[in-house]
Image (cartoon, rainbow, N blue to C red):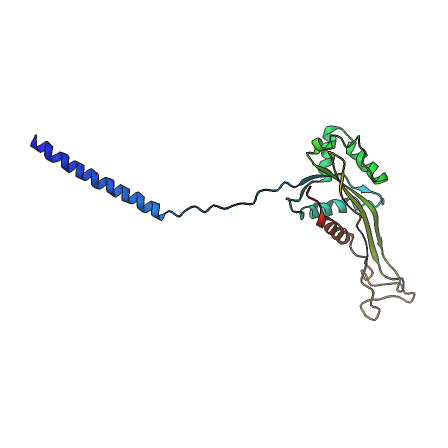
Length: 232
């Protein structure tokens, strides 16, 4: 009996020591743990969802379509996503094929001819493309001119475009641009021995009379036009 009375206080003392040690450990861990820092992230901004209809080529230049497709893809990537995101023309064509409809082509054709939307054909395209707006583009000029003889002036590249953005729901025009540029090549320096020509004045030096690259002219026009592209 006396033995049990002696063991019980000893056990209680040991338990007390163990608990105080555990409590001290948790206290130390809590002290070492750094407080969490709350970061206020900017709220996401909904950009305009734009379906780009197939480009209308009014010039007959066969290479214009492919060049425009490449330039548009590159320049649309430079537009901040909080302003707009773009559904490319080839994706639009795929959706049209899947839906077995030519309504977007009718919209683009009427706009390119008369500058207005086909109010019947545009209905429902917002659901088909999951888009807020339609971007229509027409190539009105696409010309490169190479001079062959000295005294004829400078080689040049001329590009003209028409661009318009319409909200699908109410068919309101949100934005439009008609960028155009005639870019001249560097003037020939006939005093430079690197530029050769024959007795008739015909230029003999390869690439001396090259016109500016159409890709560069188109890219600059599109980039400048998109600088003030709307976000709603």
